[in-house]
Length: 327
Ligand code: XMP
Image (cartoon, rainbow, N blue to C red; front, side, top):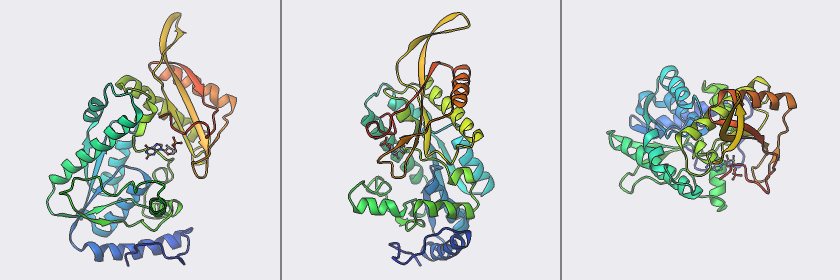
């Protein structure tokens, strides 16, 4: 049956057996709801949309059309992973759109954080709608809405991040197969559906992506420095057993330069800031203190491997007073 709300007496899904039972029930409900019609899904590669994709591939196979929009602000290897997991392994009907130039051209010279967010969100909907218009016979739109989204929108904390946004003339019936689940339950369900652990247990990543970690007006070279330093940080956290233990960790490359020296020559390059935090509710966060050895190693790697960086800084500020992201 398709639930609109989480039943009060629903047992928290904490075991593979409970996840399997939920999946079985949902697959049947989805097949009943959708029949032989087609469903469209914006697949970001984040936990929720990935689990929805995996569920619908099992339920309706080729009648699910996934659209992965690469806005150029994704982390290193992410679009490739989406293609590998969903198109190559799960045989999904996946449309991949590399819209990097479109997004970065629109963002060029824009330094106000909220304007940047609006451009990224607006452009995303436009690209997605363009792809949807090319398709025939789509009647449903799948979304990775989860139970906290519904609770928060009811409490007026945040607008329901999934609902709406598409142009007025594009009306679809919604399919929201993980709508009654908490995040931890979505992860277990995703694992049981065969998604890689790295995908279902990944750290939170903001919708505007690396765009908010490249403060001020985004340039391609500084964005690349964010992407490369982030990849090094993630690799080192994984090697040092911190992946899955630290809530969120990333790098920021601010828009100022300082002098340095390399191979006997003066440099004038950006600093790279490392942020690593822990929290339960993201309202208050504490800083994860790294070992001196790890910090030294990160400094060496980032300086030698990332073009344009000549200093590495560590952010020791909790929230409040600092937010997690820099803008
Ligand atoms: P702040 O910076 O507000 O971040 O302390 C709290 C959490 O929210 C994430 N975040 C975002 N997520 N769109 C998102 O989807 C956004 O615009 C956005 N801004 C911040 C941030 O990564 C952290 O986990």
